[in-house]
Every structure is written in C-alpha cells, then in structure tokens.
Length: 326
Image (cartoon, rainbow, N blue to C red; front, side):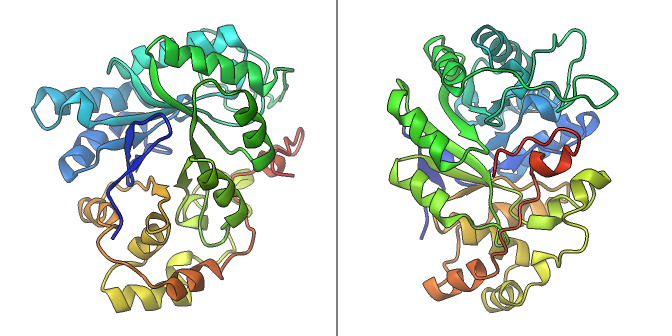
C-alpha cells in the first residue's frame, strides 16, 4: 500500500495528497484552507496567478494559532509567474510571495510555465495572467530557462524556498536543466488525468528522481466552468466520472469515481491536489491511499487516454499562441 508522503530529491518530505488553490475565491480562501486543515490536509498548492496567496496564508496562520497544526506540519507549494523570469524579478517576486503567505518560508517553489513574458511592475498590474493590458496583448521576453532556474537556486540559498521544481515542462527542457542544476530539480507538476496520461514524460521524471504532481485529475471537470476560450475543449467531452472503467472500479471498491481517479495517480506515486468546498468530499479526496487496484485495472483507466490537453496556451491565446506543448 502506498505511503502518504513522497521524498523529494532535496530530501524533504511532501504529502502525496494536497489541496489545490486554483479557482478558490480569495473571499473564501482563508476559511476554505482552515477547514481543509481541520479535515486533515497538510499540503496546499498555490500560485501567484491564483490571486489568493494572502488569504490562504491567513487560513494557515489561524490554524496554527488555534493549535491545529504547527508550521513544520504544513507544506506550501507556490509558483513563479511568467512575467518574472529575469533573475532580479524572480528574486524579488519570491520574497514578495513569501511575505504574502506569511509563513516564514516556501516549501516548494515552481516555475509555472516554461515561457517568459515581458515584465510588468506588480504595482501597475498586480495579476497580469497572460495579458499585458486590458486589450489582451501578449508579449514574450527573451529570458533563457537557465537564468530563471539559477535565480530559483539563489532563492533556495537565501532560505526563502526549501525545494524547487517546474510545472508544465516537457522532457527536453527537463533534460537541459539537469545538465546544470546546482540544487536538485525536485518536482514536476503537470496536467495528468486518464484523457492525458503522458507516460513517457512521467517516466523521464521518475527515472531522474523528480516527483510528479498531477493537476486537473478529473480532466474536463476542472475546465467546463471557465470562460469560453478556456472551456472550449472541455465542453463536449464525456466526464471521467462517467467513464465505464471508473464507474466499475468505484462500485468494486465501494469508493467514489473521484477517489478512483485520484488513486489511479497516487498508486503510481504521483501526488494529487484536488479541491472541494464540500466537507464529505474533502475527506473522500484525502482518503485515496487506502485501497490498491490491480495492474490491469490501472491500465484499463490509462486506456481512456485521448492525448487531450485542456490547459494549453497554444490554444487559449488565439492572437498570440504560445505553443509550449508542440
């Protein structure tokens, strides 16, 4: 049976199941995080782009003050946004984000995407997303990945972050970082669900001691509620909860389809970061290391693969596609 933590290449332990903060409204984030801690969650996956780091940190500090947890029992992942890839901007943003969380340090700091956008002063446009202005202009910048990675290593040296990694990277960029990395590349976070299995990429990571975290474990379910340009690929796709193998295994093991999808990942030592505002689902999503499927059953889920990626800036930025997955 799987363990409830995984060991990063940095030597730090990371929970195998966490709580994802993407799409959690900042107005409710503090209470959501506090309640997730009460339910047993210890890993919280955030990002500058999610616009709720301050409130999430408030929820954690409240839980610490109330004696529910100590800081060393909590694991915070957050991410460097694309406008801050230059060394000086990455260093400044890491410090700013750490202060915003208000927890002393960041456990895992990831490069959010393998592409640099032109710098925007946060005082002028705090959360730029992919756009430079209200007109939707996208402007890339000529910053090599190596410059950003070495800045992240300095962030470890400074004590702001304990471990570093990447998100939305493909194998070639990973191999390149491994040739010059001074601090280990500890983690790779990717879109991973039965419609987008990416077995070769996962194998590359695991062969090189890089822990994989899956986001959007429920596939189209994560995207159908988004604005049109982000939900277009998901709107007519059958939900994974209704897929034959998933429903059959849920019935066999007396768990929910969501638990089957999450266990499909965790049983292969892939961390997951689901979210829910429902108390019973919070507990169910956390309870996904307590049963083992057979190898054939795992493969029956993987056989649903369609190579279908929902989080793709090559698709949802039609006026300036950034084809990082080409």
